[in-house]
Length: 452
Image (cartoon, rainbow, N blue to C red; front, side, top):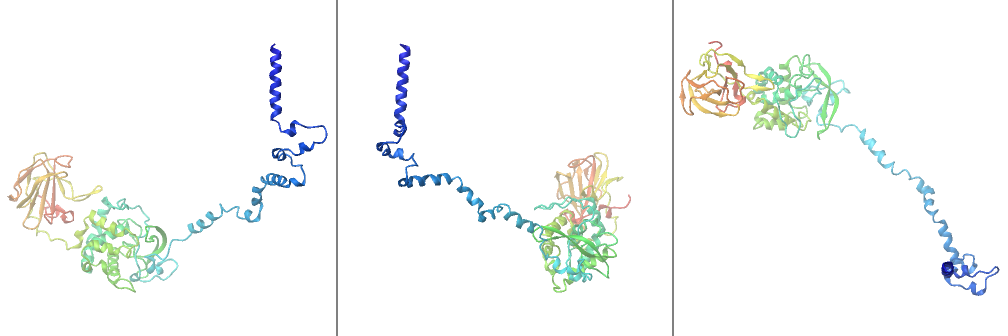
């Protein structure tokens, strides 16, 4: 029974399979096909490419299909396509290399009047036909100029010492030639790396980077030129050689007062009589004296950090004789002097003494300040009739009030260590003005007795 069911199922499957086959596949004779078989439906004709000439449209379908895989390969073999094949590689590499090896743009602002001072020319012209630029430093430069957008200066001892060395010469020349001593000093600091560049030292003494020769003397150094956009490139140039610093200051003043051969007023905008402040002068010199686009900002920062404006006027006359003032403490012991100290500037003189030691008014006057300051701690300031102002800081306790008149030698405070202090001492300042501005401070030892 089971076997009969299996055979029945097999017969049914085979019958269904045969009904799904095309007629041409299901009805085939051992010989030729009948006319009925030759006139089958279109579905059958599409699978019969051998039918004859009347079936050409059907024959045309097959050749393109057979050739289609070849068609995409044809363009790759044509001359038009084989030549541009490297296009992705050619366009980009060709131009950039030529741009990278292009020399820096010329002429530069400084070079326009300095052509004679370059190595190509053997006959440099006089200084009045030169435009000074910053020589490339051959020695380490004090890390004091931060060339960011907001330039900040950290005072260093080397620069303070350099200012002390050249300051009075700058003051003298500035007053004689209608120039800013402060600007001259700042330029000398910047151009010579505070006197540390090789060009600024013996036997050259060129503080201002002035090009050319003087009395036939000159020396070739590398110098950095700014293209006006802050991009620097290095060239060789000849710079003047001087006997000493006095000669370099005089030559600098001659350049600024006489200008260039084709323009005698070229530097006129930097004169005192033509400006309202040193800021006007430094702005005018930017792009004229040096190509550095931040030249004026750097000069201003140096002038402010080192209080150089005091060199723009006559040295203040001090009271005649040092016996007019007395030391602010009995049996004085100086623990720190006026001027450069570490990386900063010490505004006064420190006297060491035990806590509570009486502090005396160095000269009669009127108390203008008696208060607390974050750095000075408790401090007192006294204005005197001769124009000086004295300051007494780090006091343990102030014993006088603002507006009070005090006599010379009167006790005004007691020794302490308040504010920014590491131990009991008196910080004593002397100023040419009640403002106590740094550029108006003087060394207290200039007005105090040498011994007492």
